[in-house]
Length: 602
Image (tube, rainbow, N blue to C red; front, side):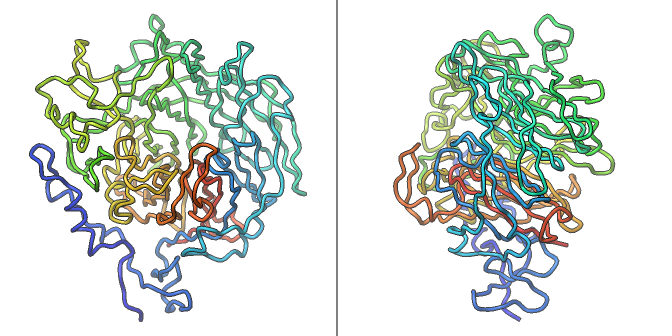
């Protein structure tokens, strides 16, 4: 049997993690926070490209892993070679025709990829994975041309149920504001022969950003974000639209669920917690709430909606089409053990430590839900997002925030190698409105969380993402997705978890969390939401390549770097997969690539 070793560099991790924590008084994490990863990592055996595994092991990348353990292997990839222009954002799969549909914001179309090879594709690893191109584009859907209406803008989301495809389309208005008109959902019929037939468009709310079918396909729900214009002079209301589908045929009109009852002076205003961030200038609550993403319970009774900018989740009862509750997600305390962060991109290294009096707003982007013991649990990727417009911005550096002299980080906030560079909000923390802040809050939890059906926190991954990427990537920790520069995102939102998918592999339930900036996917076993464990971190990115993507200006060789900026993911269960193994499809926004991983496990 080949000599055994661990996937992650555990022998080095204790030394590295000790180096991650500063020993300055008041900012020190105790030794107990350097948690060993050994209990979370399967035993493996290293294997070269011309070797095979022993009978009780299977090949996973460059390693033999024990049969029955979780495995995530790249088997297919499409590269558009359109870099930094959002050429691959949101993705879905149609099993009957073996086609992948990808939102391409660059072309304002939906790309169609031939995924027929997935039935027999073999795993690819090493340098070959960065340049893999074994899927091809076979067509595209010109949604704007099909709906044939004025002021049509970008495509934002796609979803498939059986042979019905829905695409969200934003629109401008007559005054020239590009995203502030009422949007559309375009419906298509997918035929067995692979054709895509336009049915009709349905007007929905302002800036539809996410579409999702109910589990039985009887309705389509749309999150209408309702973003303001850049001057913040036009601020449409956020809302949820619902389109009924009868006999697999969508209605031509939508029903709308609004938040106006929570406006000041209305019946439900007193229900709204002060921890729900409402900060748009002169905005009503309905204008300020910005629905980002929707997850529907497995029984189809409830919808959960992330209100990212507001640091909240709305619970919708679908039978009555009413908002049952708006949950404030509260604050993540970066001063306690297990929640440490690296807050500076100017500290010349990995410096993960605790900061008392400093907090994070969870602000999830993607959310998903699953059931355990007949109860719903909501999983959130806590990306964070600031309102930063020409007409209004809440974002400043901590060094520019006026803190009370008694704040425990009063001096650290003036140090660029500590907290001075950290981006924080001016809209919260000044408890008596005197211009001096008793607390300060940054954007995002730098984690993923699990919440129960009452909106209470069950689990948070704490500082896992920072510690694991630091141990694996070293000086490339907290890298951006537009160049290989090293630590360039610690002052912002760290690795920035955004994409999220859930699914069952074997007998276990997993969460897959995409890290938008540094790249890659974190995998956690969430079978029991009260006993969550880290499983793997997979990142198909070559950190050694010199490249720079600055808008349409491209320098270096991004085409050989691999996948950059995972934006959207879709889990395909084994019974819907052509290979009979579960799949994870990832749309990578910055590299414009779409990658497919085969998943296996006990």
